[in-house]
Image (cartoon, rainbow over all chains, first blue to last red; front, side, top):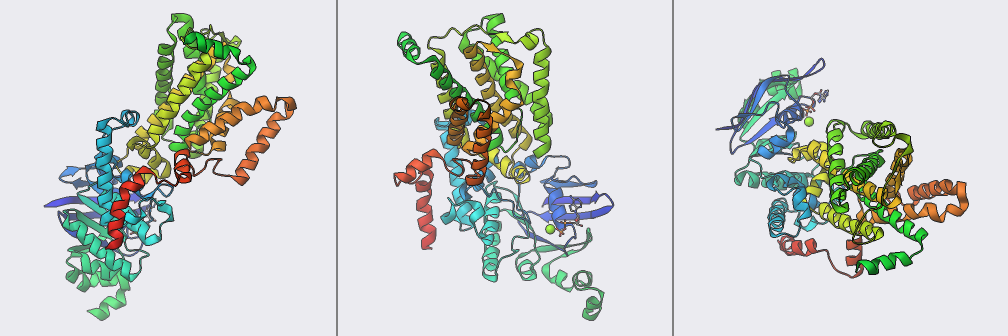
Length: 259
Length: 312
Ligand SMILES: Nc1ncnc2c1ncn2[C@@H]1O[C@H](COP(=O)(O)OP(=O)(O)O)[C@@H](O)[C@H]1O
Ligand SMILES: [Mg+2]
């Protein structure tokens, strides 16, 4: 069953067609990758899915419901968590507070709750959110950092914290935009295991990544974007051998030599 | 009890009493603006306009309807918050400088409107009868101060407050976490305005006379300076900043016309030596806990988990 379905999605920025007539489905429970050269439109596609941009034409369905025109915060609450290519943490807050903010849509008490902080109902909810936050921190091995300012964390940990923050949303679909960027080989290996653990909890993962070893090792399916167009889709094996993909990455000559 | 308090406040030199009340009202205003600017990150240059709306609303509720004072204050707060929500809805979509300019313009409009309305007695201003309260006015003011501090402290450490801080940190990330950014900005604006309105109501009844020009741009800058001096986002900072800047003009009075100069110099020094404000990055509770060698509550909660992971 498809958890996410894009039909003929196009977005223009002035004269530039950043995403061009893309059809794509992500199956529930899988790890799907999206690859392509820089500027191919991968991050733009994530921004379209999360409602940060609206498509010029085409439609996007999440869990069989159209999300066209739905504001970002509603899409998030409906079950799409995400990270950003250029990390967007709340750097002046602690690691724990970052995660608790991620858990926002799992709580209900608003201003009234703030003013009735010590009533059992509000305390119960805070306790629930705190437990959820702890679980998410453990998932990415960051419990020992809970009270540090997130901005003081080293780069690799910041990337992991962003994943934990997205997990606190208890999403059905998790979008990761270049999660391994800037990580050393050991961190990448840990991250791979982490993503597999996340999938094992029933969360569908859709990720953009440049590291081929990472992508090939972890993905069930891979889609390839080039100049905003989807040029290929298939299993890691199929993608590895696809001449169009080789051409997009290495240039025309390389593709010929390969064939 | 009432008589005793009356006697107590009566025994204080009226001049000092006025300073004490000014400080209290300053704290209420600073706490409100600190929710908008410090906690939510929305720069407002027109906070005095909400004080003005509160002052005139409250005065008119007393003059025209003879409303009991506490009901009057509560209603004034809600009316001011309502006005803030109405103007906040369109202008809070703007960010940074544009928002600041809009709040500035709004404040000027409020002033001009009150200067021309018959009911607010135009440029002559309103004489406000003193409030009939069980306890003397200075005590009422400080009761409101205490309640405000408690409420704002609760807001800071709640799901609601975290959402406001998320908006301050990164609007796009906040939206991606399921936070309705516009709604939270409007609510934050309304809370700040509520406190400003109540502060204005207290001011009107304590002073006995209000004029739209009392709540001009300089007043807004005054309130902003309080929270910048204290440290944006810090409640303790707002209290300290408001106390210093509400009292400073009085203590610098002997320098007459130079006192604004000293005041400005003070702020410049601040910016150089403590750019995050006196209490920037600190808060009172954690400071006390640290000196006592105790860990904050949440930390102990997390410690068990932490121990486990570091073993593995
Ligand atoms: N908000 C925007 N306004 C104009 N152009 C944009 C905007 N966002 C992305 N683009 C352009 O769209 C193209 C795709 O960008 P992006 O999706 O970031 O690529 P990548 O595949 O590397 O993530 C780039 O040429 C980029 O400059
Ligand atoms: Mg990108």
